[in-house]
Length: 489
Image (cartoon, rainbow, N blue to C red):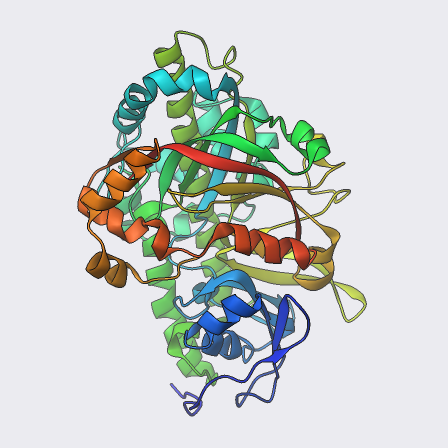
């Protein structure tokens, strides 16, 4: 395999305006487009020492990339692509790169709203947290309540969330309020390796570990009353946010296809600045095989969040002695932030089919877009932005500026500020739990020592990330959600 010479020295950046910085296409050999980074001055000061900027420049070298190599305000270093990276590739002459989606395929967020208020849950918050922790398995090796047969797992990977609803785990209205209705077309379960099947079979309905969570929250600020009403959100209302992905199955799919694409890069003599950008030409057998397996893993993830949402509804019903319907536990939305999809976007004034890679970035389509669910079409697609377990998360809606500048994309969360190892060196999990308790936040974790990895100081301030995203015209903030109880792996 051939690789371009390693670049040395800091990546040059030029300020374009209050929220955008440019890495010029001549900053590194082989760049085909500029890099555009969304950040304020304080964020950029921190990014100058982060290898994420080098990764933004590296992505700009990929064949068929159009527009720019984009970085959202929550950007940080990742595998190949930065987390918070967006890149669109032409169907003709472009490539797909698993590093532009990540190992946790269709890691994403689901939000439920309710008719409960904070005073309804506060007296029994500890009990509710205990029951949710018991109902939703978490941790690295967590297994669900049943091991799927090969036929069941293949059906999950083909039909996604619809399989779970038909199996009794949810409501049909959930599917309308899920990106792609919870099933990405083109999935081929037969193309998923036996090892991926083996890893996924016992894991449906589980959170996993790391930054995955289940959080009971309260809406403590409304920023857009019209959009909040359309989304069913009200000040003081209790919500539940679920953040997880495709578990070991998705990780194995990525691992399998990275190895295959390494061989493709060598065979086709594709020059890459970083082997983690291993890729294959769109339309090639290797690209088609990856996209079909990626879709299967994405569908597993949507079914996974569907089962967890069903467990949440059942737990609330048991704790409060009322049905989930009477509690008003309706889904607001479910979206992915690690995925690649073909979408129609304007490229140099012409509407084209492009393969949009979003890694740690969410779709953010504006009002009026046909892919926005009918109940939300007047305000825009919901954009769910988790913060950290000690501060807040946000709900926003997509804005027209995202369609014009970022291929309909926005940030996916606060974004890490500190590595997991650095956080563990500086903090103790028991102290993090104590600090959360002082704020009135209940926390349950499979391993309390690992709470240090997820402490607030390990993340950027979500307020700043949302502020930059809004100022850049990518989203409109709708509501802020404050944590009440957190379930971690």
